[in-house]
Image 1 (cartoon, rainbow, N blue to C red):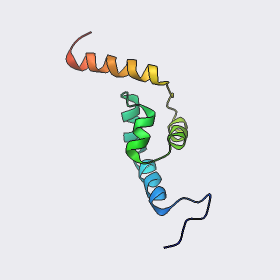
Image 2: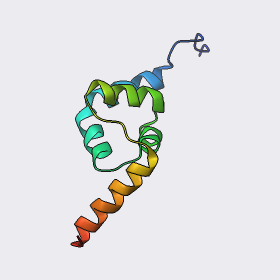
Image 3: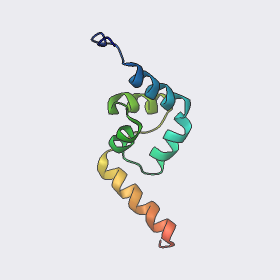
Length: 83
């Protein structure tokens, strides 16, 4: 097996990115439900910057980690029936 050329994606990275592109609606839904961007990127095995660009292309507003935590807290309260 040969080493990848600098600047080119490995086959595994290319497959991961292709999977994210194919399921971008699900990824967007997870993000809008409060999943942190960095954690989502790590779980999907892709670069955070690349995932942010994909979400921006879908028209998703990117939030900071504090806003993400507040959103998750609000969603958890709604789920538990607290308002």
